[in-house]
Length: 133
Length: 385
Ligand SMILES: [Zn+2]
Image 1: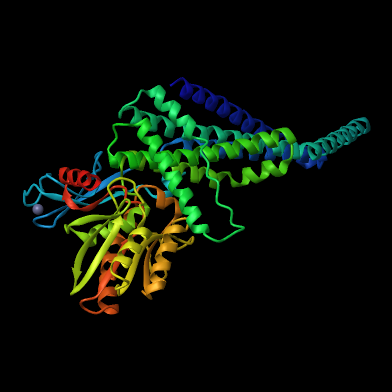
Image 2 (image 1 turned 90 degrees about the vertical axis):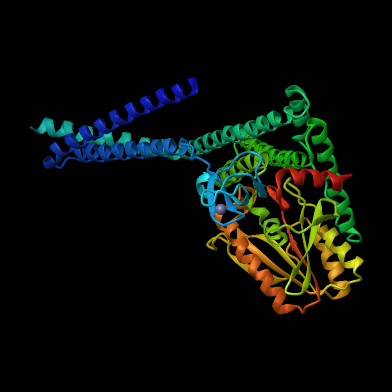
């Protein structure tokens, strides 16, 4: 929990720095534009630095968003597909421990009520790229 | 007015100097900065890898400590095993190389089995096999962690950016593989079928509720009838995480029937190329089995000796999908593969022929036959006795 809180405070500091940078960039651009009619190289520089500052801030912002996105754990969903021995209807539910394919359970069929169902498949619904990223 | 312009000019001149100095400094330090950033990336990844290793180890210790020994003992046993290694046989003298390789692999599996029984003495046959697979995953994860750490420290010490750049550029792939092994640990802990279990799954669908018997170490087989042909379906013993010795099994069957086998059909998972869909089915000839060599060699030897054609049906998947919980696309390919096997038997053999169908792969989470849960355990004990 304290690890999470520390991360959270880091995030706040980063957001603060980013907003200050954006503000600074905006001021630089504004000042640069004010001096633009005089045609001095100084105002051109101010304008340029303003744009660079905002670009860097934007890049930092997107990196921060990416790490936040990555930290969200995708749920790993494993399901069992059962088939009724009597009427052949298929049913899907979350996998319980100790189950394997080919096992005949005494679960009740929701259609015909026979309590003999065979496990046909056990598979993971989370796509590979989500599971390993 | 003039003085103001002069001042402006001076300021211009000063800021230009500053700008050029800044650029020059950047030139000198750009590479240093780059290396610093790469090293930072690597040490972040390293702590991620460490957390995978720790997490996988903790779940292993927890599972093991439920089955006999204390947490401390399990921990001690595991840390001894982490640096386990295999020395490959010398290939300079190829004579009997396969036999030597098999001997070493047998020794490796024996060692793991013995250690797992020591750490978890109360585990039954299936749980022991699952723990062994879980352990193998931890050894791989730990190895990845050690290699990355090696390059990070080497790079830090030598400041050689080639070491650092190499590992940094491979980081995304390394982390992907490591996370897959971490996920695999979950599958082995819970005993769920993985992508590689597709071979045994197809075999199970063919066997149905026919009687099975053990024909080689950790390999079972059942005889079924397909349109008047006698078909022996072979798979690794489940639902524990066994691969078994399918080569040994097929060789024994061939020899026991004096080579009177019409055809061998093998079913296995195969690595897909990027862009190929998962679960795609492909047919070919030759022994489809991804073992280090000995099992494939036995099948080829025996089949060649008696002139038995070997056909293969493979199910394509990503290498990481092969070690994590089975994907629906792969599971659903099973039915289609069963149909293709039947088709192949009907088209390529005559009634009365004897055919071997082998579902190759790890049998984790796949039963030997369709049966109620308690019956399977009783039978497994009967075979062992
Ligand atoms: Zn029903």
